[in-house]
Every structure is written in structure tokens, then in C-alpha cells.
Length: 440
Image (tube, rainbow, N blue to C red; front, side, top):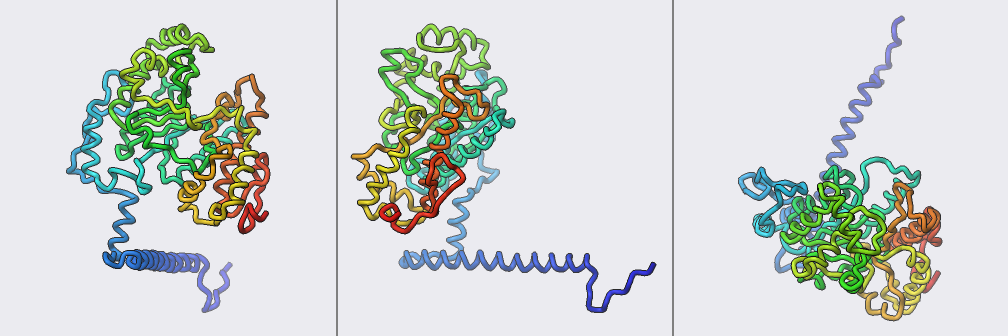
């Protein structure tokens, strides 16, 4: 059978698609280039207007923008990365030495990345993570996603970079100990940051405006939530919590991690350390060596070397135990809204990029209300496995996490004009009226 002849004005279908796609791609390319050029021209014009005595050219704008994304690393520039003996792993036979000097040399070679961040504060890298396989708990992966979103939201609001890890960087360092190989590797991978901030996956930021008081820690290298009397007098294994910690990127920290990790499951003395911890801490519930007990043991045995550089934070909730906190979140919201009804500037709509300004404005009015907890830690809930502590139910864990996550999410959604009216209903949001909460 002979195919019917196509009319003279009709192009074969395949060629039509090809030419259509090609012309579309070319058009899109011109549109993209034009859009970028227009955007850069507008930025250049704005910056020139703001600073007429030192006008910027469009090329200056491009270079400034690019410097925020990446920095040159010339191959002829020798750094510690070129040392074949450098090990990212925790290895007793090959510890990192002279890290302060190596890091300073690298920073001098990369001046655009040294010093403070765009927010004029020391650079921070937040590190968190979870297991590599799917969660056994049917809602576990959903919860891990929401918990990660919460951390991304906080970091975005405060100009903090974040790294999420989901593999064991040391195959024998599992459970509590899995974070220390990640923290060490993060120090080496990010010499530009002053602090590594580890946050357990089951911890929730619940005050999205609060900023770490870094100036308080100028003379310290490790910050954990804890109490001096519980450690040195009561010798309690719960005298501090290592689920959220802030550790300075320096040689002291490298040495601490090496010393601390000797009590971990990769050590041939792991069982011995478990027995030792059980003897020292009478209230310890299980015989395995854990990182929390290990750190307290180091504090007790060599306070001058370790303890004097560790800040036990108890003035705010660097991490607060969830069970006593989630029930009061609605009342805390009411207290904050009452302040906003009185203070017009706190009701003002604003861009998300300037949220820190309004957070600082709010500080002077918080003396007479219960503050939002900074971080709520769902210790014992085990959202991924679902194997929660039997002293409370999974329903309590689930509801608690929903309340905390939606409480935090409302602070973020406020900048987008919405809010969850019910902290136990994650799917429903309502638009906020102008001048909320004075109206609405």
C-alpha cells in the first residue's frame, strides 16, 4: 500500500517536533541570557544608586555574585589536601596534627572564604543525618523529611550551611557514635567554618528567630547542654546531653574526638569502657559504652585539659527534653501574639531575608512571657525505627512531634502569609489577614 501523499504545506511529524524543539531551545536560550543580563543590570543600577561615590560595573556585580558561590583553588597552590597521608577517618595510627596551622594557611590562600559569614558572624556548618536504608516505621521516612525540612528552614533564615549525611563513615561506629566520624570529616572538608554544629535527626528547632550566642563561647571549643553540679558532684550520666553540640574547628577538637572515640564500638576496649562507665555512673541504665558517658568521664578525669574548654549551656534550651515541653506550645504562642497586639512593628509584614531584624526587635519584649524553647529533642522516640522507649506511647511521640514541627513551621509560614490553625493538623493551613494578630 502506498502512503497517501502529504499536502504541500504539511511537514512530516518527526521533523515538526525536531524543528519545534530546536527553535524552542534557541528561544529559551535567548530569553535566559536576556533575563540574566536584565537582572544583572538592575542589580548594578541599584548598587550604583546606593553607593554613587564608588559605582559598580556589571562585571563587578558578576564577580561579587560568583564569589559567594565558589572560590578559585589553583592547582599550583599546595595545601594540606595534597598530603597523601591525610586521613578523614578516625584512626589512632594516623591522627590529624598541626590542624590549626594547616587551616590558617588554607584560609590565607582563600581570603574570600575566611573570616565571618555574610551575617558578620563566625561561619557555621550544621551537620545532621540518618541511616542509609529506609525506615522500618511506616511513617519514619515522612518524619525524617519533616525533621530535615525544619533544619533547612532554620539554616536558611540564619545564613547557615547544612550537610546531611546518611552513611556510616566508620563501619563499626554505629548508634550514638556514628556522628563523630562525620564531625571530623566535616572539619577537614570545611576549613572555612569556625564551628561544626551537630544536631540529632530527632531534634526540632522551635524558636526560628533565636541565634546562638557565639560571643559567649569565645574561650571555649565545645558547647553542650548540661549542668556542672550533675557532672562533678552527682556524677550522673545525664549531666549533659550530646545530641546537639557545637564544636570549634581546631586541633583541640581533633584531639578530643580521637580521645573520645577510643571508648567507641570500633575499639578493642569497648566492653571494658562499658564496665568502667557503669562503675563510675551509678545511675547509668545499660552496660554499653556511650558517647555521653564517655564525655563526662573525660571531664571527671582531666578537667584542666578538657573541662576548661567545654561550655555547659544551661541558660537556654540548646536541646530540651520533649515530654515536658510540647504541651505548653499553644500557651507560648498566645503569649507572643499578645506582645504583637501591643507592638505594631512586630506585626509588620516583611521579607523572609530580614527576619533576623524582627527577631532582634522582639527580644526586648520577651522578659514577661515564656520564651519559645530553642530546640526540642525527641529523645527515646526513635521516629525511624518506631522502637520507642516503653515509658511513653508512640501516640505521645507522634503527637509531640507534630506539635513541635507545626509550631516551628508556623513561624516560617508566617512570612508566606499562612499558618496551621491546629498544631495537630499538619495538612491544613489558613491565610493570615493583614495586621495579624491584632485583626484575626
